[in-house]
Every structure is written in C-alpha cells, then in structure tokens.
Length: 263
Ligand SMILES: [Zn+2]
Image 1 (cartoon, rainbow, N blue to C red):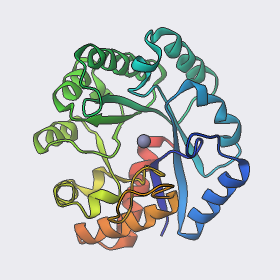
Image 2 (image 1 turned 90 degrees about the horizontal axis):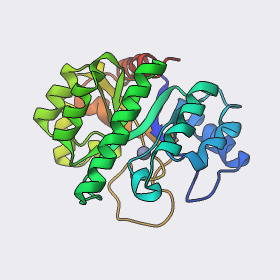
Image 3 (image 1 turned 180 degrees about the vertical axis):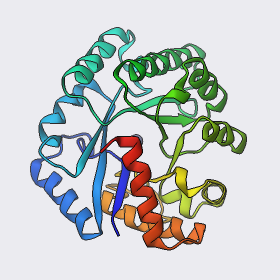
Image 4 (image 1 turned 60 degrees about the vertical axis):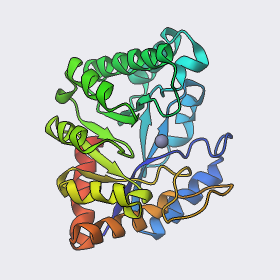
C-alpha cells in the first residue's frame, strides 16, 4: 500500500532553508514507510524561490499561497498578491495554500477583516487559474462558510487542512464538496477522533503538517514533532478508527488526493 502526506512544510525547516541533502533525506525516509508523495506547503512569497529545489523531486507536490499572517506582517497585501499571481502564471502549483483565517491567534477585528479579504482574493484567483485550494481555518467557522459561499467556492476542489471545524460547519463543508484533512491529533484527541468517525472515507485526506504537529501524544518539545514519513502512522490509526482495511483505506485516500491535487 502507498501513502500520501497531504500537507507538510519541508522547504523551510525551522526558519532556515532546507538543504538538498535534507530534502533527499525526507523523501527517502518517507519512501521507507511507503509514503510516495508529500505536499510541500509554502505560504510566504519570500520562500517561493524554493521552487528550484522542489521541482527536481517527482514525490513533491506543491502548495503555494499567502497565509493568514501576511496582512499583519506586510500591511498592504497587493504586492504579495502580485507575487502569487506571478507564481500561478509561471510555475503553477498543485494547489493554492495554505490560505484562510485564524481567529485563535488573531483577535483584532480589523486584522481579521484583512485576513478575510486576502482569503477571498485568493479564492477568486483559484477560479481564474482553475486550481484547488488548501484552507487553514481556526475558530472562524462562520466567516469561513460565508466567504466560501460568497465566492462560489463549491465550484472548486477544496482541502480543509487539519480540520478543527464544528460538527454543523463540517456538514456544510461536506455539502460543498470539501475534503477534510486529518493529522496525528485526530487519532488520539477525543473530540477530533469524533470527526474522523463522522466523515466518510471518500472525503478524507491524511497529513502530518510536519514539522509542527505530533503524530503521537507527546509533550511540547523542541525540534521536529513529525516527519512526512509519519503519515503512515496517521493512516494506520485512521483506518482502525474507521474499521476499514488499511490497504483499502490507503487506496481511497490516494484516489482522493489524486482528485484534489491533480496528479
Ligand atoms: Zn501548515
């Protein structure tokens, strides 16, 4: 069976550019655990040139976008949107991401509105370039659904990365055709496990969000908390929760991923 890590951050590993040796290592380590593909996410224009490393690896699928931290860091988002547009025109990724809203870390009203605007602008670009979107959303369920509806995002392919949305919201997202992406904590944190149980396998993607999220319950520690290879553990546990053969589950997830990321 073959696995896929549908969301990780490899290009910049702990605030420094990943070396080619590290890239080779991540991919080799993943292959040893039957992980064939890794979606490498870059949400800051300063990192876009990492394309030069990514492009040499057929195992790497690319997610490129403008993250929710952009308005706070840069103020005016227009020049950043121009940089993203250049990427979409010249070296199109598999998906635009991660984009979205985070009200857990951003409590300021004005800044939240700027996040909404940047999110909406990128959904428009997804329509224009006919690309799917990978969404980060935390404590922002109502605005998430509202903006997706306003921007007719149900016409797009959508990955909800590390889904933490409430039950009613997830129902709406599934009706819109979204795919929910689950990571390590979904396999051991009770309220997240419920989500796994309630989601049809035909809409599930597996991810690590490496290096950020742990795959097993662990205390916060310095250094990487996961690697893309760990998605094999995530998939194994989700298959157990769903009471489905791992082989079958892996196949379904790979097909889901092929649909979303277009490979
Ligand atoms: Zn991420």
